[in-house]
Amino acid sequence: MKILLVSQYYYPERFSVSDIAEVLVKEGNEVSVLTGRPNYGFQKILPGYANKKYEEINGVKVHRVKVKPRKYSRFSIIQNYLSFHKYGKRFARHFKEEFDVVLSISLSPVISISPALVYAKKHKVPCVLYCQDLWPESTLVTHAVKKRSLMYKILYRWSKSIYSKCDRIVISSPSFKEYFEKELNIKDKVFNVVNQPILNSSNRSNEPIVYQNKHNLVYAGNIGKLQLTDLLVEAMKYVKTEDVKLHLMGMGSELWQIKEKITKENLSDKVIYEGAYPIEKAEAYYKNADALVVSLKNEGYVGRTIPNKAIQYMKYGRPMLVVAQGDAKDMLEKAKGSVFASEDPKDIARAIDEICSSKEKDHFGLNNKNYFEEHFTTEKLTHQLLEELICAKK
Image 1: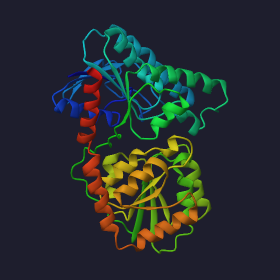
Image 2 (image 1 turned 30 degrees about the vertical axis):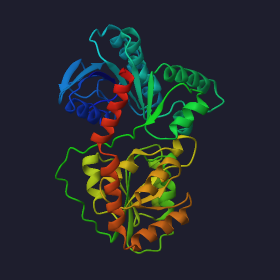
Image 3 (image 1 turned 30 degrees about the horizontal axis):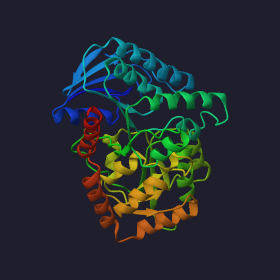
Image 4 (image 1 turned 90 degrees about the horizontal axis):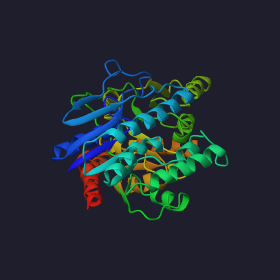
């Protein structure tokens, strides 16, 4: 099958879309990617890519369009979104190569789907959306806009229009179906679930960190309000087990406040901010941890979904401390490798004490690893996605 994959982000930007494309090629498909010039997380267009329009990466044909580099300011982020929307659609209008199906992988923003729709309409081929983020819901939970604002109304209509034009929508979390049907009133689609693949490490010989403390918990990911990192830090004040440390890794809107909280409340002996590490470095911390932490505020539809880190962590065969509801809790209860807590610092501390004293840590970890191997390898999830593409072509 010839597949045109549209995604604003692609390697060397670190997203699982690159792994999906390469697995599709390994399974005998021909894959071309329409993407931007790499800039996410770098604050600039990477050296060597300023004028690069085409390259081939591990059998995947990659076509790159101009984008404004994403920096920290909101204005810069908006410019970045709109530039891919503009130049991606321009490329799609003039791209003459024929494909059997168009696959769009949507993170943020929803308008990144538009080039796929332009190509699909012009060439009369099906357009399949693999939805990994909800719009405009994501703008609400991040407090970028208010629900009653004019901007929200504009984004709502724009999002609904874009989603409605897709021939098939594959969702990465079961609760997405309810959002599409109840909030966006889109009921004429089949919503099948294919969980989001993890980001695979390129380091095959990463030795685990040797911790100095007896007990260690690791949180790696976005440090923001939605991820409840302030409650995790607060909980460490109430932990009764001695010689426990919480290791935080990542970036986000709450990082400065979290650092300040650690200092002000004299928690530097219990909480350490390690830095913003790539997966190749972060995973060294996972392998000997007492538990890996999954936390997500139970707010709106996004708060009911499965954070990708919940699947990522399972691969490493360690127990999980989980502060989450909805799809994530349902999935992890089935895996039987987690201790759960409510959004209460004292209850989180209780869960930490329970994990540290448990004699079942290795058993919990093995349950998680086995569940991952059974359900969530990139190969298995990509094969499920391929089946959706085949159905769309029919």
